Image (cartoon, rainbow, N blue to C red; front, side):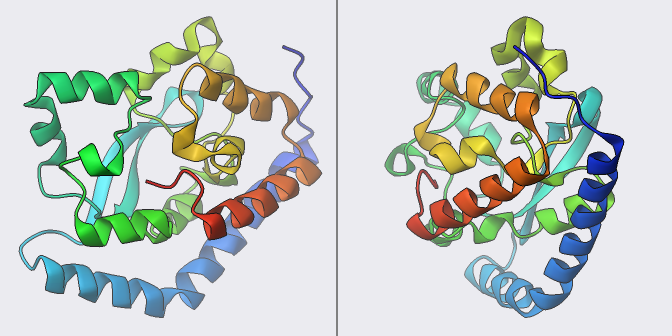
Length: 211
């Protein structure tokens, strides 16, 4: 795979945009954050409103990704207690169809379809764990899907928006997802990033592959 060289000016500008965009998102959308937080606490007072999970970041550095909680407490334990369902989860690209996933709450289903559960990732962007545009951050189990190209995949900062999400998100499974994510890594650049942001906006409004 031919890799497009990443100019230093692009990397600096990308980080600057990430910080500015994250700050604006956290400030402007703070009322939305508050509404979702209150709604989640009213729906399930004893459960946390935020969900965090360890993901693999740039150069293999682990970090905690933040989302609004869309699942029941101890969701991963519940999933792994059912070996057949867990196997289906792995074979389905680490996803389950909404109607078959016992972990997702009714409110959580709405948050996922609207992508509102992803809003706390503005904090990840501000911290530098993630970028606005990049491959979707994955859990350690998924690294095997990239085989001997895993270092290439981890050579860029993961993103909140990416080519995979714009192309169909959960409708696209491995190994096709691997090729799509690596296509971004190979071609990342300023105008390419803008085109991916626009494609993601369209995909979000269509709720394409969001579950």
